[in-house]
Image (cartoon, rainbow, N blue to C red; front, side):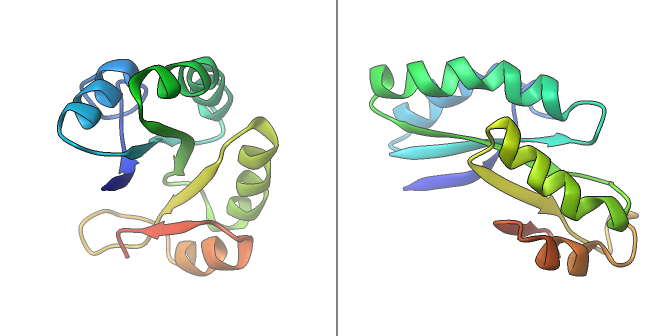
Length: 124
């Protein structure tokens, strides 16, 4: 089993990335993507913080760990460029937090995410 939408303490999760991975493996997962919430102010920090961990820990834990981000509450006009920036910085999976009736995500986010080429549109 794979979970391609997890969050660590880098956004609204409660575990450090290594513990998140360890618990996933212990629960029987073969892989996870750590996809913390980001915007322009946090994307570089989150990706840099996960690079070494995702490269080195996965093989030692017998777990595929993908470095990802979830672009969240970004104005739709900026989403396509942020998707490209995330990839350029090293993100292997780009999720965009979509429009939902539960949160005040800007109208047009879903279309911007799809047209921008995100990998996963979450929460639509």
